[in-house]
Length: 260
Length: 226
Image (cartoon, rainbow over all chains, first blue to last red):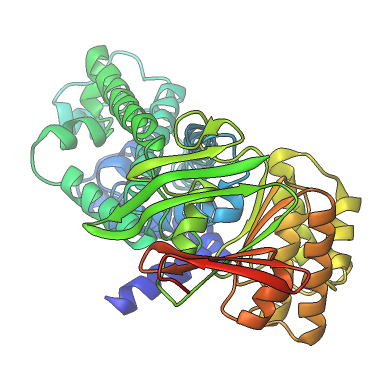
């Protein structure tokens, strides 16, 4: 247990590990996506840039544990000093601390989403020359849904869906981490809770899986309601987490604040 | 400015760490908290800082109830347990970041505070390279740099050399002159008597005695008849 705690403490306070996240992310994604593509190519299907973006959601390990762990390193680094007494006592109120942390989480989620979308977009440009081929007979889309579109889908719709889903996914993870830290004041509990939460959300069929997975699939683009729900559901979930935090904030106590 | 604790009790997971605390602290005086490890000094300081809430009783800071009307005292500087700052920044940069939260002071006041504790504001060393004594000095500077009305210092002379202890004496004297309410915790009886105007003795979460230290003459009162 001590080794695990120290491991997380090193991650939380280490800027280099946080930077490593940004370097590892493209390597991790490109590696996992290349494996997926190799399998796809064996089926003689054509893949477009839109497919690359979507595959990264569903098969490229977007919500996988490695990705979550990398994001977690960044989140821990971001909030590592927020619970120090010297910082706390300078705030107007406990609720204002919660609000400013949410602001920070939102900005960082936005940055992570921009960066991730950028990395994947670059990757898509390098590995495919077609923006969208969902009207083609031998596209992955047609193979999946057993029919093709009359006109190709705008790639910007896919990019936007990817960006928004990514944003909500990272934001809900950050807020959940913060909520646990407000409750227990220990980084290690926050980390383990997020990992368990994400694993629980990713596997099996239950409420959290449904609202937190943020998965945009081919079907989502055919039926608008199926595109809307994966985007709206996390928003509702974030709303619940925010409300819980706001209620909790005023009653929070900081016993071990200051012990990094 | 005053702090008044009435019937304060604090229980954590079934263990009573503070009980029956009735005490009033006034501006312009230095109060000392003395007692063995685990007697509740740090808990009492955390309570005054608003970091924890009393299970029972109230903490009144100049007419406002802590935890109800205000989350934290409006004007407070504190050094509780070990000073903790950002490892990768210089002492000056650390204080600059903290000062930016309230925006009450500028760079010159930060430089002054650092000079007062014997640190060089232009020192390029990062906090992680600081010695224990330097870290302690930075923690003290952080506590008083914004000219707060209340200053809470937990073991301020820990890890300080003689010169550092002298500086703490001077700083506390200055704060007192300016009408600041200062609360310190210290193990060393001799130092405590030199630093504080009044000493509260603590044991098992209770205030067990009160010593008035004025001009080296002192009166002593204690629940245990000391």
